[in-house]
Image (cartoon, rainbow, N blue to C red; front, side, top):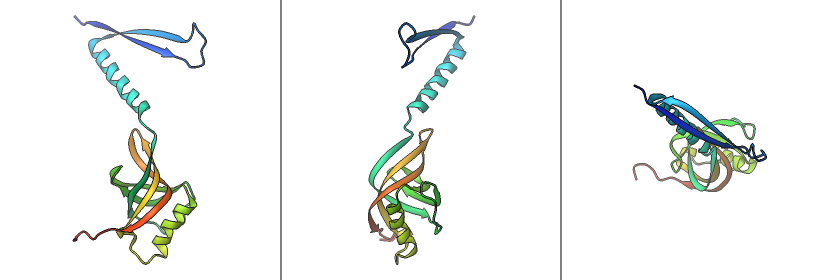
Length: 152
């Protein structure tokens, strides 16, 4: 014999007037269906509550892949970088500010130092998809430092 469970959902509409302000829905499930429904609802709630982006200030960013082309501001550059504070893997770089782009591109094209041996302290918006970081939107470059060699 399968047990029947009832899940109660309460929903409020922000622009509704009372008595429509709150609705109650009761759905009957067998035990397996109820467990699956709870799991799916919890996953969807986590996705909705996950931040779409996060702002990080004055964090070290190191380039993994560079691109000499001049991208359109706000579009992907083809560059990849790592910000260990956020993720260990390289993520896409997007410039939100002309000044930040010019400062980094200057080091890339005109600078005498190897961009892969430099660290950039930046303010960036970390964009997320399903809670996972996917891109850095760089808005400001605070400082550029030379990174120590691996053998030191």
